[in-house]
Image (cartoon, rainbow, N blue to C red; front, side):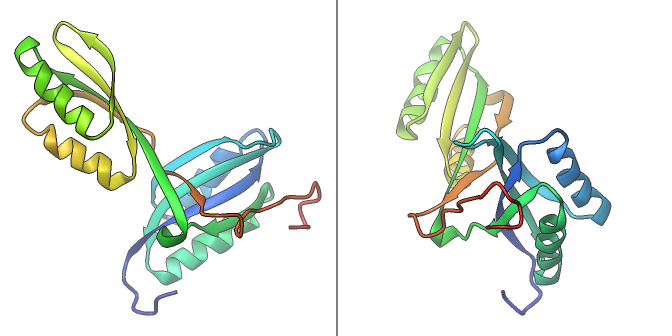
Length: 178
């Protein structure tokens, strides 16, 4: 870890038992300790007994170290690790509803196509766009829509996986065994 005390953003991947209330316990831990969650996503893995949670947070090295240690102590947490940008792939989904009439529609569609987005709904006065990619891509897309009125925006937060097979976590049924 860096020793300069600067605030940095990190992405944690957790593998947890798919039990009632686990997401609440994790978010409650952050809340009680005064840590912020920038984004959180959760979903079942290939094993329906295990849920993968991706948490994006920020802090200095001491705070991030405490977050990792405190989360690892939770009873249903089987594994926690940082997904470092160079060794991982991050993606986010955004759905954007843009006000546009027939004269503006082609402009919005052209920008959407450049970013490999999809038009998923068309109404007389609006378009709904679906776009996936890293946060930078989605932020850049939203900047290009600056001249249009965004009626609604929903972003999923980051989901991520480490690259290759070297960091795959294989879980045994016994929590104490990695």
